[in-house]
Image 1 (cartoon, rainbow over the protein chains, first blue to last red):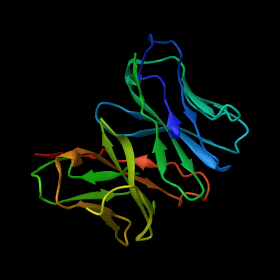
Image 2: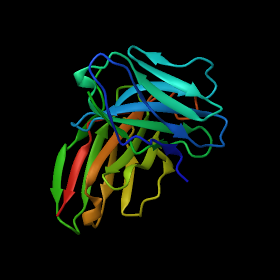
Image 3: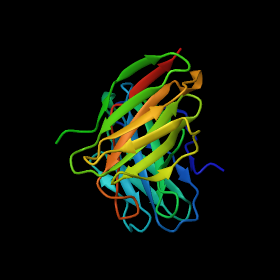
Length: 113
Length: 116
């Protein structure tokens, strides 16, 4: 079964508008971390934001915020005031802190601004 | 502080050959992980090293191997290359061993391997 699901292969957004990239996950481990990465065409994976499963508040980093809904097992990325430089592939990833500690990635969402 | 560096950035090899890729983590980071990225399979975990020991391994054949040195630099080796090994190989480093609190991984620019 897919552990990380990103249902939007591609998204378009106008400059200065906000956009939400969807991510749902599946785990039985009570302790896990959720990550969002940005991958421009150059290939490098850029860390954006992290949310721990025990964190009470949604994580925010500048224009990025993570809408964490634990009961629904969703961890959507919200980018406010989109810029042309935001055009890239965005990956949601999860690390289960139990036996499987590597990052498991979703299939990604190609964002075009 | 310098980021994760990977060498070489691009590589072209022939089927049956072997290849070694190198990764230097961020200074002070002791955990290094390797990932393979292909259009068909997406991003897949290869292995993770911490203090020169392999801590975790993904579902890849034994042709894929790695090691970590005392200075935390890591290498991965692929023997008997196949066409399907063509991919972007990404290395990531983190300060803490996963499971010990927040441990975001910082990725290098990757090595793009083409097997002909």
